Structures are given as structure tokens and as C-alpha cells.
Image (tube, rainbow over all chains, first blue to last red; front, side, top):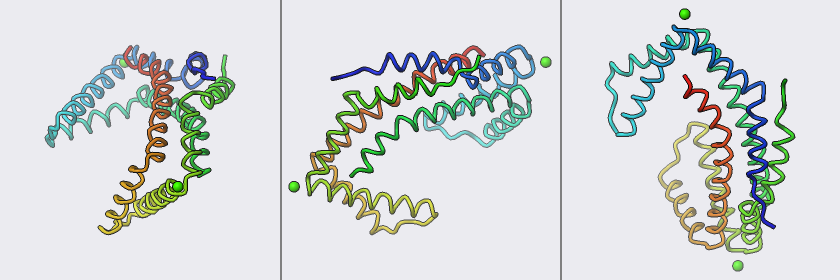
Amino acid sequence: MTVNIYDDLNKLEATFRKTAEFLEVQQAVEEVKVDDDALALFKNFRKIQLSLQEKQMQGEEPVAEELEYAQKTAQLAQQNPKIMKMLEAEMKLSGLIEEVNRVLMKPVQQLYESI
Amino acid sequence: MTVNIYDDLNKLEATFRKTAEFLEVQQAVEEVKVDDDALALFKNFRKIQLSLQEKQMQGEEPVAEELEYAQKTAQLAQQNPKIMKMLEAEMKLSGLIEEVNRVLMKPVQQLYESI
Ligand SMILES: [Ca+2]
Ligand SMILES: [Ca+2]
């Protein structure tokens, strides 16, 4: 018998969207979006992260000034309570996804432990 | 309303164990276990990987001889068709777990894209 997991996966995803952890990220994102300062800091932080990532993928070395600026924008973003709240909520939500991974990895590990 | 995802997660895990991908790993593991050569090669390969990982975690540098031996055992293991089949089945199963991650990450990404 072959099963497909998509029915169960879609059900899990629907429930995932209703967890306290997901709703907290959603709420925190909304709070950032309506705060001009937080919004500007976060957009700037993200823009610089993306530009550094792009360089890295193209094998280019960022210059010292860019790294310093990136560090500064990250620091400023993290000093903003609304951004901080959002990042903390995101970390908690990541913990939930890690738990899903642990639960699915366990039976695979058990197979290998039987060797 | 707060939900918990464990009912859906346990259901997903039960279905996951019945997927063609999981059953294929299970079957491949059994075939390795009953083949003396494959079993010895795999156990040796795993023992050396674990010992290298332990050293790495303790901040020790493996000596060149150890690395060479590790490479050799990995090569020998991969030349064994039963081990190869098991590792390939494991990779396909990992793809399924990655799909679960993609499905759960998508609504989180959408929140961030709305910023
Ligand atoms: Ca403001
Ligand atoms: Ca044999």
C-alpha cells in the first residue's frame, strides 16, 4: 500500500497557522508594519542582508565598510523593541518547526540504530 | 483560540511511516543488516564518521592518516550496492522531510513578504 502524506500535511499546515506561535509572529509583523521607525529599520536591515548574501553568492568579498554598516544596521534593528519582539516570536515559531522535524526524523533514526 | 498541533503531527508521522519513501529506507536497511559484507562496511564507515565528529566537537584536529582512512572507508561503503541503495533511499526520504519544511515555512515567508 502506498500512501501520500499531503492530506495530513495540509491539515498540519492549517493547524500550524492557528498556533499561538504563528499568531504571535503575525501580530508582531503587523506591529512592525504600522510603526514607521520599526518599518524603516527593518527594511534597511533586510536590504543590506540581501545585498551581502548576493555578493557572497557571486563569490565577491564585501569590503570592510559594508560589513561595518551591516553590523550597525543589525544593531539598530535589534535595539527596536517591535523588531526584537518579531524576531523573538520568529525564533519560537522555528522551534515548532524543529519539533516537527524531530518527530519525523525519529523513526528514521530508529531504523539506523537497528543496524 | 489556541490550538496544539500534536494531534495533526502524530497523524502525519503515522502516515510518514507508511510512505513509499520510508518503506524503501526500511527495506534497504534490512537488506544491509542481513548482508555480512555490507553490514561490516557500513558499521566501520559509521564508527569512523562518529569518531571524527567527536574529535571535531572537542576542537581536536584529525591527523592526515585518519582523514585518509575515513575517505577510504567512505569510498568502500559507497561501492557496496546495498549501502548505496540505502543511502539513496535515505536521500529521497530527506526530500520528503524538506517538503514538509517548505509547506510550513511558506506561510511564515508570506508574513515577512508582506513587510
Ligand atoms: Ca513611530
Ligand atoms: Ca555477504
